[in-house]
Picture 1 (tube, rainbow, N blue to C red):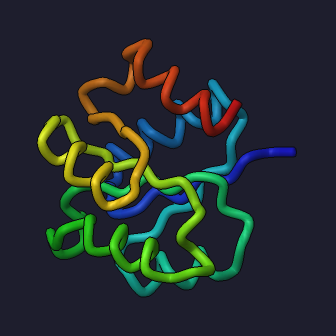
Picture 2: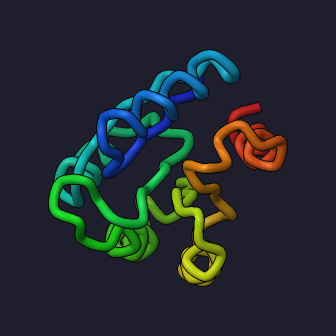
Length: 123
């Protein structure tokens, strides 16, 4: 069965690069959202295997970690795996402390470590 990934808050070029990677390498279906309302609505409709949240949302540059906190506070969404998309180790650590699994940065899309992290969730 095809895995579904929710890509949150990426600008069009970054979303395109992430989508290509996930579709080509993992055969995943990628759905895009831009903020808390559409993200939480999409998650509540079910069937999402992984959420990738940009550190700063493209629509309004708010903190993507706010969505992570809302997900982890909701018993229906808390178990959905989440990765932060950020090149900065300190932001990755903050996300992990809030309940995310280790993510990756856009600069590391082709790195073997990124593929290892994604493969753990997407197979």
